[in-house]
Length: 314
Picture (cartoon, rainbow, N blue to C red):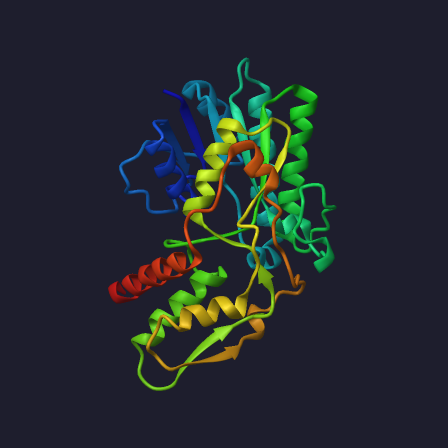
């Protein structure tokens, strides 16, 4: 049985990745900061990603075959408000992990989860984005993820570490917290459905087109990359299709019987936004035979159902 470690396992993606790996027969350990509910009966270890000695100790004692590095401050919006925290967690945390791996006699394979935000401002002519498209990150979060990626590839080349990276496009689904577009819409709709009087949904930029995938498809891609991906490579993970945010919202509103109006909130507008991001996922498909399996409509229904249940329980 292969042994896997998920660093940052208590976040949105971590739970889905854990379920995917357990179904595939992996032995599994997950780390948490202790700030998130971890009542699920898995093998949890409390870890501070900035504690290099603790990371090294965990890796040595666990004798893992592979490590999935998910720990991150993952919101571009939050990164404008807390840039220092974003750099500390995403860059310094990754560096501590790389140093721990470098100090091992037999280091495990590492999959570093990055972001499509690394590409930054691109033109429609550059889309779909290939892994060799130049990166021009447009927010502190994107800068931090590109820096973590460059450090990882450097350590792979300089020290012979077995590392591969993703640039993951928007992944969505049930249990995603507020602050991300689909989850934000679904929570507001669920709340408005239970409210009296005029119902107004607050939005940011609706014209941007993004590449959305169900998180359950995304974690399957992560497992397949760990098993079949090429060391030292960066892989886009996405659907290969773009949809405007306003269309996403229209589809969600069509799933509700409430009469909901739309209002733009300046607080939800980013200082820098990009009109179009869509992935070229030919490298991922070629090396792993991965394909999207979950239709967007299923993702929308599942996510809205999750938030309706959450709101009902509040």
